[in-house]
Each structure stands twice: as structure tokens, then as C-alpha cells.
Length: 267
Image (cartoon, rainbow, N blue to C red; front, side, top):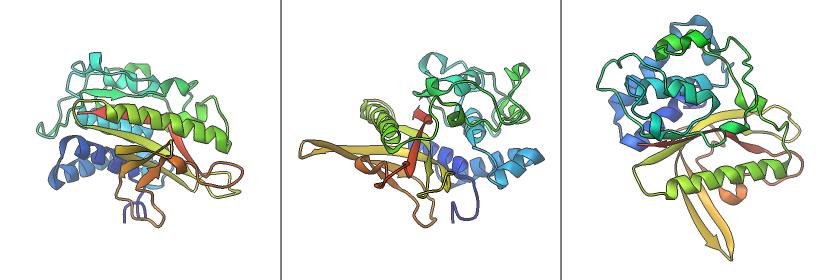
């Protein structure tokens, strides 16, 4: 019933990404799921936002990557990671020892290719304070901001042509990332789905990309983005076709991939 009873898509997305990179089994996945949400529940205001989906969940992705995928000193990956505004700072922060120590799933590379699309960092709630620069992941939750990067992007509501252009840029980044030789790879991204004539998205969803399959047909580029997503709600997306990233119709785009959210991960 994922996506029907809860709003924990960002939690599932990170766990699915870790599974794609490291092939983890059910027991450690349950521990990640349980321990992360226990940390949220110890902060009543944050927990309320999480349960009621009154948040963008960027802080959830940030927290879980810091807690489960980064080394204790935060320095081992610094030379290999290219990141942007909201993610570059936490990757270099010192973190407390993980507990239990066996639950650590390292990433050797992380890129946020569209970070420079964000302009300004005005949070809707309390921003992360400068004096938390060396805070452990759990301590940083006390300063978690309900930051929505796409609200600060240089574009406003998108036309179909603009949204399709952005989606194809995301496609190219994913294609280059998964085509490169090397360790296992995954990606995290957020998308919005709209109904005709409705201003606000009816679904805003975090998901994990496990790969893509490009091909050419009649001289045209085609392909499919494969999602590792257990959402079982009616109409849930488990693949994104290259030619159908933007649903056919007139007016505004009915599906928008959020470039600012894209995180490329390497084991």
C-alpha cells in the first residue's frame, strides 16, 4: 500500500537506491526504515510535517544519505563528489559514529547536476543555522528546513515545451551516468503530476531510478527510464518513456521532472 497510507516516498526512495547499489536484504532495509522515522518522531513538529505530507521531503533525503551512506569523518568522498547548494555542505560535515556500525552502505560518488538552477536559499521554515556545520545527522534534524528548491528556480509555471526541454536534459544526464563504466549506479529524483486545469500538483513523488534503456527507431531516439518503486496506488509510474515524459495534451505539462532534485549515486 506504499503511497496509499503514508507519505514516506523519500524514505522508500533512498532505501531502494541503497538496495540498487548494495543489494541489501529485508532486515537492514527495515532497520533503515524504522530508525530513520524514529529520529523524525523525536521531533514533534518535524514528525507532524512528515505524517501530514506538509513538506517537500528534501531534508529526508539529506538526512538518510548522511546517516546511512557517508563515512564518519565525511572526508573520504570529498574529492570524488560533485554537489551543489543544499547537498555540498552536508557531505563535508563531520558525522557521529553510525549505530549499529554494520549498517553502513558507502557511496563513492554523488552528483547534483542541476544545483545551479536554484536561486536563493530562503526556506519556508527555520533554515539550517551556520553553527550546525559539524552537527551529526540527528542533531541537524533539529534545524531541518522545509526547503523547496524548485520554488527558487529561475522558471515559474512551465509550458509543455519548457517542461519537456527540462525532462530531456534530465534524460541526457541519466543516460550519460548509467552508460559510464564503473561500479553500480542509481539516481534519486522528484516529479510532479498535474490534472488539466488544476494549478497545484496532485502528486509530488520521490523515486529511485535503477537504469534506463535507450534505443533508436526510424532514426529517432527512444528509451525508457526504469524506476525502482513499490508505490501501488492507482496510476503509479514504474517507467518513464522518453517520448512520453510529458503527457500528451494542450496547455501546461501534466508531468514535470524536477531537475533540481536529481541526485546521481555511485556505489
